[in-house]
Length: 215
Image 1: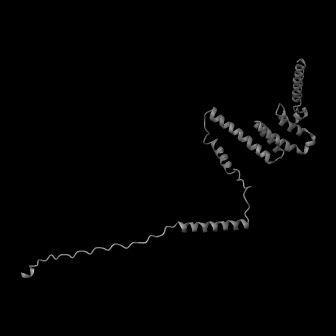
Image 2 (image 1 turned 180 degrees about the vertical axis):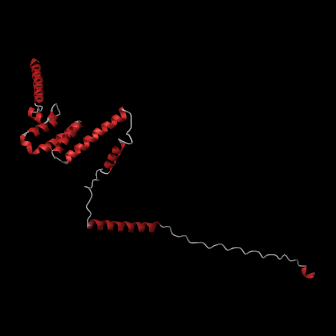
Image 3 (image 1 turned 90 degrees about the horizontal axis):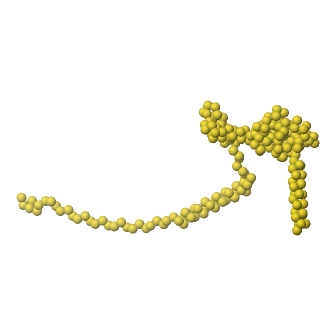
């Protein structure tokens, strides 16, 4: 019994040590890295710190801009949209461009605008103003409508001469079948019965008196 208790205590102790060791393995940036990239100071998100650790590694010098763009997206994903926009602006000042930076700018700006609109409606209990805030909001909404994702055409079959011939053949068969059904279902005309003979009109009686000739 005592042996089992001792064994259990040892297992618990090993589990605790492994957990502590795992915590010690969390990414910690070098002071020189934080000095070069002060936005990383105080951050605890391991994915973000991993990106900055790669940025500060001289082996990744040729990938530095791509890694910083990924860091900007990570800032957005963890809700630090102002930091994301700040990093994007820094990269653009260095003439760094790319779809990822554009996406980060759009997503972070929309998130900030949505948060401001919620404050306006739920906290301040007011609407957009007709002369200042509503026009740009409407312009953005119209621009989004014109940029909706294109329909997925990956499952559509390509149009070929053979497919066009098959389509025309199917249309002819359908038209012939429809004509046959119409012919079978058309009602037969009923034989017309002879009209009943009209009764002869009775001879009209003369209104003259038979005694008129004796006058």
